Length: 193
Image 1 (cartoon, one colour):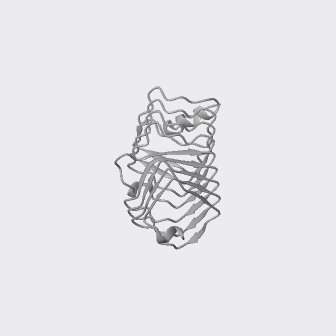
Image 2 (image 1 turned 45 degrees about the horizontal axis):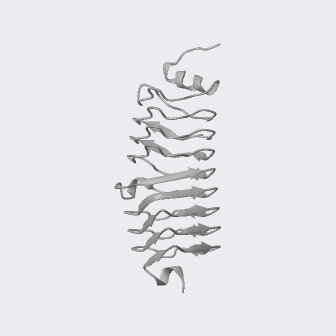
Image 3 (image 1 turned 90 degrees about the horizontal axis):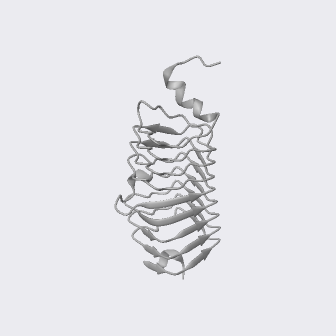
């Protein structure tokens, strides 16, 4: 039976699925693992993922409108062009470990306690996102926009290429390491020698 032929899945392991433009809308996955799967231009509208893991998967240009992501772990995955801001807000909780995250939108999301540890997070938007205690350790944040965010107690140690305007975001008790912490001074237009 194919993944698109059933509505509810529980305690399943999916390996090496190659899905392109498949309609997985209105489905439910609980305690499922996806290993080495490709999801390209798939429809996840109104789909629910609870306590699921994606390992070494490629997720590109998915429709995640009203998608429920609760306790979802992405490990060494490639996520391209996902609009997480259109996911269900209630019980939204994801964790990313050593992922490539490109051109994704996290604007308005509550990402408190979320870990992006060791990930490449490039050209992503975090506008008005809640990121209290978020973990960005060892991340490359090239081209990623943090604007009007709550970054209190967030951890940016060993992260590189971030650009955060301390006038626009709350950064109290956030953790940074040298020399990258000097990038926080860019908005002051200082000359540092």
